[in-house]
Every structure is written in C-alpha cells, then in structure tokens.
Length: 369
Image (cartoon, rainbow, N blue to C red; front, side):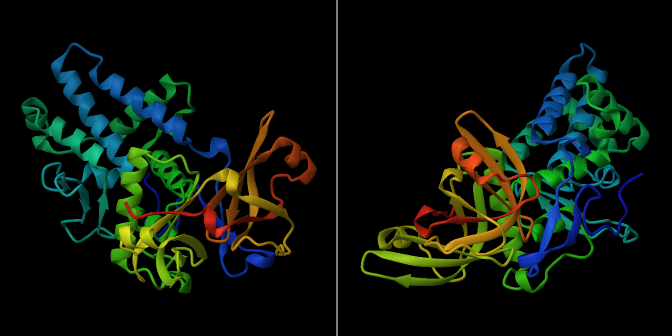
C-alpha cells in the first residue's frame, strides 16, 4: 500500500519538539541505519537495476526490464509514490527538455497535490536516449500500465539479490529513503516537502522570505549539484542575501537560510562584483568540515566565530588521526565537523550531546552556480 496521502513527512522521518535553546525551531530525527537504505546502498541498488535491465538475450524481456528500470529511476530521483509513477504518460508527463516530471492528475479525483518535480540534466539525457530507442518507444505506448504487485516483486528481487532485506527494496521504502537522503544532504525542508507532494508545506514564519519560485530555484540548484558532485565541502546552506555592507577591500554579507538562520560571510569587493551579488539573491554558502569548531553544552560560547549553531550530535566516526561529528541543528540541517582524535578524546562528546558548531565568516565560500 502506498504512503498515506495526508502525511507531513515520510514515515521514516519523525519530528519532535525542540528542547532547551532550540525552541525557535524543531529537531528532525533521521532513522536508524537499518530504517531504510542509505545513499551508498541506493547507488548499489541502482547499479543492480541497470545491470539486470540489460542482462538478457531476449529483446522482449530486455524491454520489460528497461521499463522497470525507468520506474525505479523516477521513484529514486523524484521521491514519487508508485501509483503516481504508474499513472504517468512517459511522453507527455515527462518533459525532458525542461527536465521536469508533471504529477498533475488528469482526472481531478486524486488527493495528491499536483506538482512538477525537477530531475537532473544527466537523468533527463539518459531518459531521452532510452525513449529514442524505437523498440522501447513502441513498447511504452501502453504507458506504465503495469500491475503494481508485479513492480513490487521486481523491486524486492533486486534488493534481495544484493542481500538487502526484502522490504527495504519496495517502492515505498525507496521513496522514504530518497526523502531521508535529501534531508541528510541539507536540502531545505520546504523543498523536500514540495518535491514529495505533501499537501501541507511547513512554511512557518522562518520561511516567509522564500516564495514558491525561490523553493523551485533552490531545488534546481540542489538537484544539479547533487548529480554533478563537484564540491568537496561537506556543509552547504541555501539562502537569500539580506544585507551587504561594503568596505574598502571586502564586503560583509548576511544571508538568511531556508531554515531561518543567518550566515555571515566576508568576501572581496571584486568577488561581489564578479558574482553580481545583491540583496534578495539566492546563493549557496559552503564551509569545509575542518573549519567548524565544536563547543560543549547548551550555553552559547564566547568566541570570535560569527556563525554559531546549537545542535545535537547525531553521528561520530572516529579514526586514528581525525574524528568526524555530524550535528543536527534546529531546522533539520546537519553540520559536519572534523577535529583531531586527540581533541575528540579531550572533548569527551557522545551521540545525543548538545554542542555549538561555530565557524568564522572568513571560512564561508559563496557559490552562485
């Protein structure tokens, strides 16, 4: 059975009230590792589908498998429900030139929120090449008119072939895994909700400066950046410039994130001109994990770092030399920090502890791509 239509978040993402100094927002709890497939496992499953789709000498079987592959890719990258995918017309609902999938029910009876979901340039190009195959194109003339039970069985089989629990490979769990993946990669909450077709978007007072067009722009930037994976920075924030204060050599910039936080950055005046920055422009701020400092406890630290965020440690990866911390802050965004393992022992932090993650305005890199 597909997910409930009136869900506010996928079942694998639960929300709970913030505590202590985080009462201005909410914490978003990401499920345990075995709650759904992680990004690496999703990539392995995708590779399995691709291999399986071509691993047969029979043309009719190959065409049938390619159709299942397309269904998997659409769920994997749009987060749509299985019934939404099966209702699509591959040739009229998927605009490969504009890279959008139109989930607008034609009968007017569906309770699902009509929406258009963007896909990456790379995925659009791949689908276009597949649809240009005359044999597959003819095969898809009957659209995705397939028994949902048959699709689920094929999904289960591919998951089991990798040794994954059967249920984690189901279409509904792939959708939930995609939602978790987007949240873990710091896609703003309203963008995730819009993409998944939630009927009630969490546009609280913290999001009032972000219009639907802004959310669509952020989603486009995120999807393309995710597909290209061109940056090594672990921390990325999408925001809108609210203030520029120009000095003799450098400019101080304050931007408001989709979660309502403020991030300050200082860049040269020439960079401001080159990037054509101005108030109201959407931009992405990046910070490398080694440049993030950690301070124990809920009390705000007295330090010179302009950017300070209170959060809870969600994950710790300890190595011989360095230790990586993942901190989830009030709007569900994560911040990654890397410290020396010696410093980690001195801090004595554990999962669930409250910390402040802080970084200087000079550690922030702005990107308009």
